[in-house]
Image (cartoon, rainbow, N blue to C red):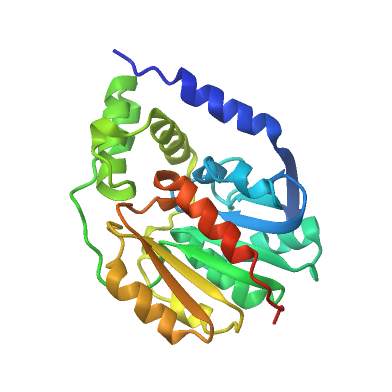
Length: 288
């Protein structure tokens, strides 16, 4: 029997209706940005096999205090695909260029990146001086030990089968193995809907980049405060080791590990993450 995603779809539709959608072009490539709220600019970057909806449980809480801008990164969702073979720079450059068109190149912003988007955020902050406060949630690019929970299953094969129940089963399994600490049968249909839609619309291959290095080198290029956050059970790293090690290597680095959470911390522990972010962004700080 096909899964009932009616409530998940209605929640996504409601949030979509609240967005100010802007398609900004750079060298012929359009990036889709969605804006919410009023206040100082806060930019949220999603992870690999993701979309702006990686922030579905965070946008409204943050938009009560900030103008929140959330893109579909190039090669994801509603944004155009970067030229092949360009690697990470082909994604970072249009993200910075379209962001600057959106808010102004000299406008200070706060910035949060999740997973692969954390690595993107670190490079963005290294190249755009007007980033005041940076938060990375389970970022890629640290090149340290990972802790796989189990093998992922092929969602592409399930999608080609045209069997919604089979696709739902694979997505629940993969979310439990990689993204969330919850067991597959306990996973919220909203998470399944978001992950399924994002996977089907992802055209940029981030895995090799995210599992490579470069995170620390990018972070070392800025002097502003950086907060590094991992879920206790994040399979992409050993948080008890990497969080403190990275934070201690930075001029103004801080680390936090969320107990009981997996990789997608801002979904699984939304209230805690929202409070953590709002507290961090209330800190007085000067731009570089």
